[in-house]
Each structure stands twice: as structure tokens, then as C-alpha cells.
Length: 166
Image (cartoon, rainbow, N blue to C red):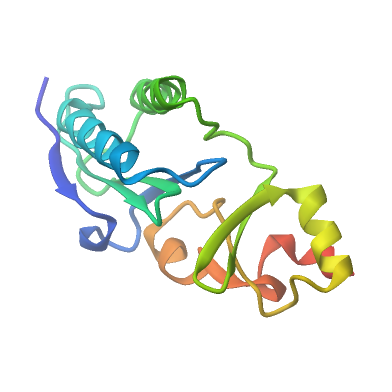
């Protein structure tokens, strides 16, 4: 099995790279971020797809988001390699007692803070005027580095969550 070439950060990968974003249901402590980062770097160093060398990165951003990415020009992430990444993320969930797979959690900026809540709570915030069309939200459904760079942090009116404005 060939060792993965760890590029360490999403900033260093090409725009057409595959990206997965996992959002924690709570803010992570600096100690938890360090644990996750060390585990993530170790994971991508041994992560492989059919024995082919991959270029991968692993980031923890804003003490809340885990970003895993692969430059697939060299080799495509296979079903088995994607399954192993999901097992790894589930191990982090269990270790830190967090939820990283709740796609109905919305994360948004409130001043310098990032807050997360359920979609139904977010709808109530919109109704009350606590969030508006210019509130910055996180679109964790992005799947490429190009989309991550341009569509991950966006105003509410440019996101899939904009339906709460109706």
C-alpha cells in the first residue's frame, strides 16, 4: 500500500479537489482541536485508495468544522477509502461525544462567534429577525475546493438555507 502524500491544509489543494465538510454540533475546545488534528494527519498519512498514492488534506476550522479533501487528479477516492474516512470521523464523534453527521444543523456567524442550531430553530430566528439575508451561513454541502472557496461561507440569501427568509 502506498503512503498518502499529506498536503496538510485545504489551502494547498487544486480547485477541482473533492471536499467533505463535517460540522460539530458544538464548539470544540483547543485541546479537542489538537487531538482531532493529530488524528486527522495520521489518518491521511495511511489513507489509500486501491493502493494508489493520494494527495489529501485535513483541517479543523473555527473550532467547529472538520475539512477532509483529496486531490483526485493523481488517484480517485474509492468507495472503500471513503468508507474508511467515514469510520474515522465516527471514531472522532465517539471519542469526543460530538455529532458530525447532523445535516439539519445550521451554522452561522453572529458577530465574531459561530453559532449552530437546528434548522427549525434557525427558521424561528429568521422569523424573529435575529438572522437576515446578509447573515453569513456555512454551506457544508460543498463538494469541491472551488465551491469551498466561493460557496462555503456565504450570505443567507445566497445559500440553500435561504428558504427560511420566505
